[in-house]
Image 1: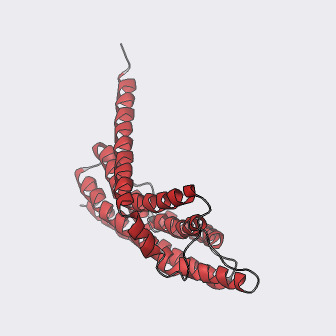
Image 2 (image 1 turned 90 degrees about the horizontal axis):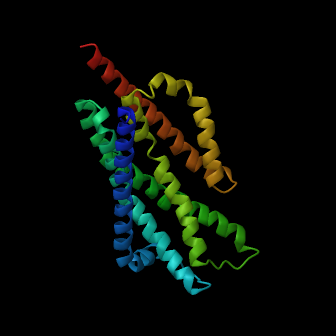
Length: 240
């Protein structure tokens, strides 16, 4: 006779596998849909360039379109992945926690888009101007499409993920994994880690570093304030 705990574990693993397959299917369908209008997206992203981007071979065109379609698919799939995670942990949550966690899903999508927007409209042009200024006196700047869009993704997608910090902190606070006191005590090492991330993603000049560091520090403080709000609400509910 099999151990009930083993049967329970197998059931959880089967459900996790099912959730992962659904998330991957959503990503592939979104990517296929993005491919239908990838040329229009490409033209919009390259609208401010003074010259056409260079490709060094036929595979470069496919790779660039894959990068663009994959980024669009990631933005579309993120709320789907969040919903699948919510469905997976739903049985372990109280009814109130289930409703609250479900409300995080549109917030996750919005924060990711805000992070992408910050990277694309603020950070990416700042860094590109800096690099172009460095090359202007000594080099003829000729960008390949693959390098240009790879660079763009590196300047945008990480910030889409970093902007998820407030939602992640609120969710973990509600689960009891984090609390505002712990976050307040971890402020200095957290600031140091965020500063390292900012310096690693930006050119070696103080202006670019500050442009990135300031929003990241603000995000941490917003996350701390939200954690306090959630924690106080939980204490009021427990004291009733």
